Image 1 (cartoon, rainbow, N blue to C red):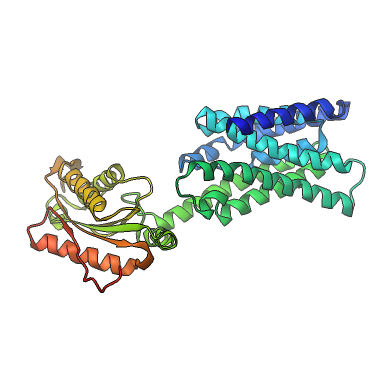
Image 2: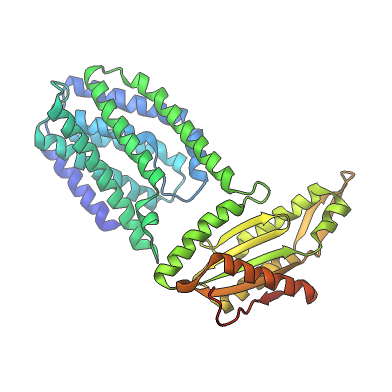
Amino acid sequence: MIGFEFVTVVAVALACLTDAPATVFDWRRLGVLVGAGAVHLWLSRRTEETRRDSGPGPHMDTSVVWILPAMVLLPAWMAVLSMLLLRVQLYPVARRPLYRYTFGTAGILLAALGSWAVIRLTHVDVTAAFGAREAFILALAGLTYFVLNAIAIGGVIALSTPQPTWTVVAGSRRDNAMAALTVCLGALAALAIANAWLAPLFVVPLLCALDWGALQIENLRGDARTDHKTQLLNSRGWHEQAGREIARARRQNTTLAVAVLDLDYFKQVNDTWGHPAGDAVLRAVGAVLRETTRQGDVVGRFGGEEFVLLLPDTDTDGATQVAERVRQGVAAMNVAATDKRGQPVVISNRTTSIGVVAGQGASADLDELLRWADAAVYEAKNAGRNQVRLAEPPADVAV
């Protein structure tokens, strides 16, 4: 990361020292780009904060729409200055460690200088004329930005992730489509500003609407995969993510395990204190599962009082230890709730029965794993509840 940032600093210095001096029109465009970018960031700051709070990232933001026009229309030092001013304003919203934000800025800056180099080496001036050649060069500049930024971010993810997958490194199709859309909007903004310096007045509302629409799509996607009571994955979301982990385990022939949890006598909670109290217990169990599992574990609620875990790279002993931590965590819960009359109560001494099964990735079958883990749950209940039982499939059954 430090080496990459050093290369970026050298590239910035070379570009600024070799580019043409600024003109009066350049100063006007600089002011418009910086002002429009600041207004855009201010209007969309709440939306951006919500998007970034939803996960650790990396995150693509539409502020890059103001970077490509700067590289196309302004001298290098002005373009770099306008981008740095935008990044400084975005930092309080991003709320990320400084070293990560610095590297992200370096990745954007080096990619932007790549697009600047394409424009300068081809001697294209979109303010003078715009035909087929200029359109091709502008598209090439946008493509250069997209590829270099993807290499920078994907490269550091690949180097810092123990077992990176292509989706993790390259990003999802939705993320890449959004990034490509912002590059296209940046190219259109460059053309608009080249011919009408007040064009950003019309671009800002469009970007704010795009930010809001992207957030709504993310929320709808999350609602379709998330259990609203516990904020864990629902059955659909769990199967989608578990299917990807099964596929990875098959490719790499690694072990994985499944644990099924069923809360003991959960119906008594609803019957005694009411359904709101039962919901409070479910939320508390969800918190226990998040605290006792790893970040890469796939945790979901299948409905009612049943929860399920998929534990990648985990053998029988490891899965049993995780299940035991969960069992102890549930037993230690003290859940503040209200009874049927609205009086405060504390619900404690809740227990859970857990079934665990582990398998080898090369022969893993998700349905079989679930079936054997579910059978182990019933064994735990028949043996007195509040315990972990390990399923032992016959040797000729592939799980």
